Image 1: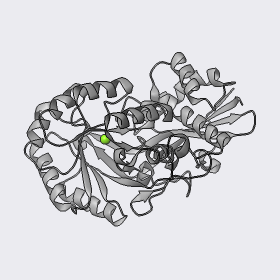
Image 2 (image 1 turned 90 degrees about the horizontal axis):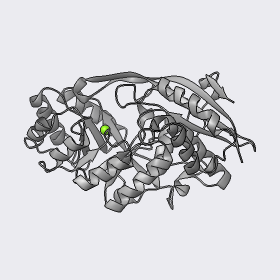
Image 3 (image 1 turned 30 degrees about the horizontal axis):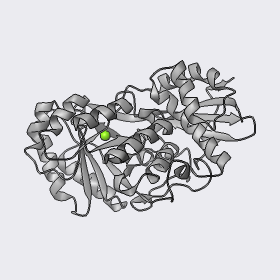
Image 4 (image 1 turned 90 degrees about the vertical axis):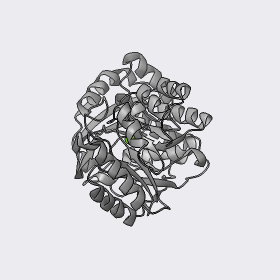
Length: 368
Ligand code: MG
């Protein structure tokens, strides 16, 4: 089996509401999504999505993704898509780094591998069951009352796990947010306070030793070293996210004892191939994970949730659904959907979600 054609589609994904991160430093209203279609010489077709969360969240952006695919695609025509690790080695040789470019190509190859093997991705990735995965709400930064109101809206949809976005210049306001939310959320629920790297280490130590925060604190500072410095001086378990760009970062975090858990995101790491390697390392060192993608439609969510569902239950925390924040649904009704606080990955062969070609319109590039 050989890759015959790679088609690239671009779509804009408007968010239902403007989304604020990092104490209001970062605002998001529209995502630039790239859908990759890989066709093979024997008639199978695979899909992958690459949707950075805007262009200020990570070193990744939609135009860069498509430029990278333009560079890589000629090297992939004629290769066997059922060997995603071999495809990854070719992509790494032709374009070092740039994991977010490789992720949608890699996911499309996994989709084809699953269809060829007649197995769902959760099984190919190591699962023995289409396991239920709890879903994690995402609560945009605001006043304590605004954030509690958003948590109540999420709870009405069945969410019992919440990610509250904090982190700003006003230390007192962050302390108020954390205290108010910790006290307001029902005891049966879980709350992570996600700082999205906004604090300096001194601020993180000051805030976290002034509050009785529920559960995890996520990515308090910009760098791994800064987060490790904080982790040694506070009592909450630390989750790392944005600074975990590759396997080396995970080794460094483990050596430094910088965290007890991480976010595993295919688009940040380079697709399911790399995310699975990271997941397996995290299981081996006893870390807990939120496995989800950085943004996108239900197609991106479904790819990530196959990996989440295949992860041992003790290591698997809840997963966020990016598509829940969109006002459009280009994979209408397919893939993972919130079933009152949890999702179940599809059990059809492959990825189990195909975008609506009418929604995608014309391809912006076709290779060869
Ligand atoms: Mg985060």
